[in-house]
Length: 242
Image (cartoon, rainbow, N blue to C red; front, side, top):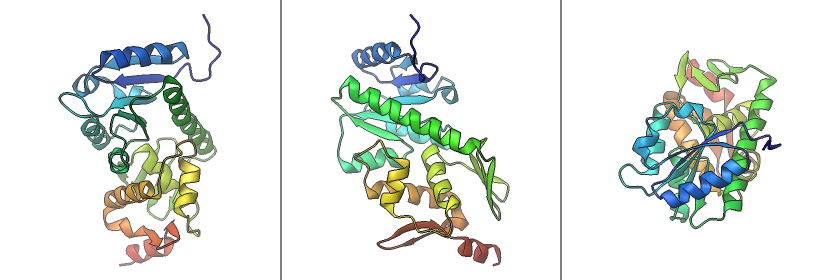
């Protein structure tokens, strides 16, 4: 039966060692029109071409390699496919750990199928919105910082900086408004509209990761206590003139 669903071409990978959960998720997501594959371990998932998926639903607590470890590994390797973590842990620190290793969303077990469906659609919608926005411009350039929206890459001094999707979106948001200090709330409202539990600490975690990857250019992301963050053009010029 033909399903009139704008997400039906989206390809989702479910990674969970609980077969009953993977079967339930697979059945329901397929019924909504998604293409779905499953893996019962991180090790099995890593054998797949992960760049070919539009989204990964990844369990945290698995035998062998954990979901957090898998996410960290594939982000280091440059795989930017959005990740939604599935886990029995639901403390703020656990959520922040998920974001710190490159996750895009976080669903605590037990969960309802409706909740999973809503989160999946929210992440895919955000991806499509960002792609549409970026299609109107190919590049954003600030001196030696080049944001390539076709390739979803940042290069600094012709060297690629391996940013995750969320990190790229966050740094791009700041770089598009270099004259403006963006509050954490403003950033959350623009990047995590459909993820209500995201806190200001989540923004700080992502900023810390971005600064670490920028190395000697970390200070181009400036902050003012009580206000927020901005892409500091003056600081970039200072670094280049040293």
